[in-house]
Length: 375
Picture 1 (cartoon, helix red, strand yellow):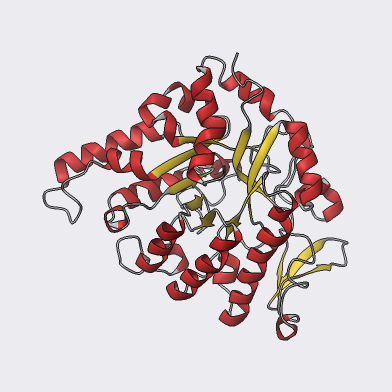
Picture 2 (cartoon, helix red, strand yellow):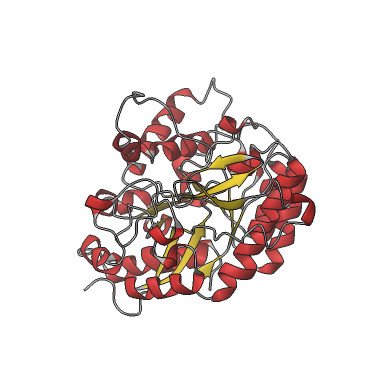
């Protein structure tokens, strides 16, 4: 039987909803007026206010506990969500109900990779907000139970040296991974094919901190009709990380940074065998005249540097040996609509029904412990 009691699920992709005092409790007095704060609209909705602008997505798709026919994109108030969305003590209770041992919780208001702060007008304020979020993540959220929360940090992309300083500030505090944009170019930043990111990647290597690239952390790949229902991009979200993966494999990143690790967060895995086959095919035929490496197959780079992340990917599990069992991690995606909470462990037993116990254990727990040095 799969999913024995000794197998502890570690979710490498969950989400938290920041409570209303994350920044008001931590920002210096001079930033209080412009910094993020919750206000209530005339309609009774809770919204974030930042630099004078309004951000209405306090609980973007935080629908855990509701039946699918009641799903929507926007819980409008904190009391529209279960408390585990924004309270780390209550979250532990929700994890217990779900049979989940530990979770890595990405931000919500800042964007999965902190893009809201990257686009801020005042860079000094933005840096203070990033530092405040990291302090919240490490000193409040994860400190609630360090054995059950995997700490993730944001960095200021607009200045590599500031980013290095933030990595070095938080590594001794227990940070385990860096939330990094799945494609820096839409943020107006240099690509993976430049040397701009070398100091950041070197710092990540030195700290033993993988990059967690959550889909959509730099925006979404266009291509669907503008009048299409939102179900279309929901079904296509993982294609962001297909682009990211191929971009990385044909870039110089892994030659300059041989110890760098990358997790493709919430990207699924079922597409990986084809993409690896296609990148190898492209490399075989085109490497001689392209400005790409001519020594190492892309699939070999993948199996040294990349980890996939799956929720309910039956096709991916059926083809797990084409990907590498040691390259696959598991996620719950609480409190979003792709999550199976409160039946995640039950559903996992169904997905892994025909998988040997040692492989199930690797995927749901051991790979994540190794990747994030979360022992």
